[in-house]
Image (cartoon, rainbow, N blue to C red; front, side, top):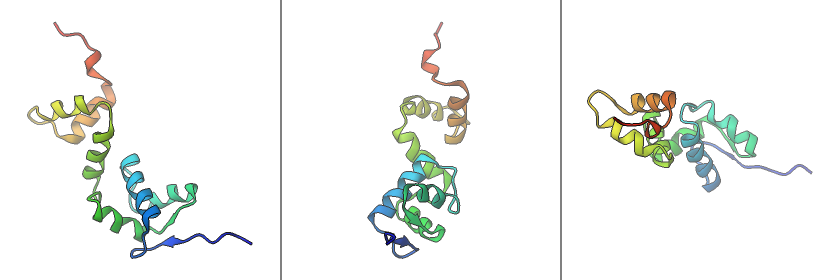
Length: 111
């Protein structure tokens, strides 16, 4: 017989579903509520799109910016992104775009 897998809805997100939703939110911050569950299915975790958002809300990851901030916290180049944000006119997304295009600026020589 086929093994029964539990599907999470908006009110039934268990520990496995919560872990998958938060990990996916920081791993793929541009994925929205509808696209995230597709990645879970590949791992064998079934979460409905309406089950993702409440988990993100509970963990403060409902929008793109908080998901990017969580990603930067785990990123080795966070030591470069944070000082860039201290410059006038450079916010999180601008700093991330700059680093993504240029790479690690610590490799450049100073004069």
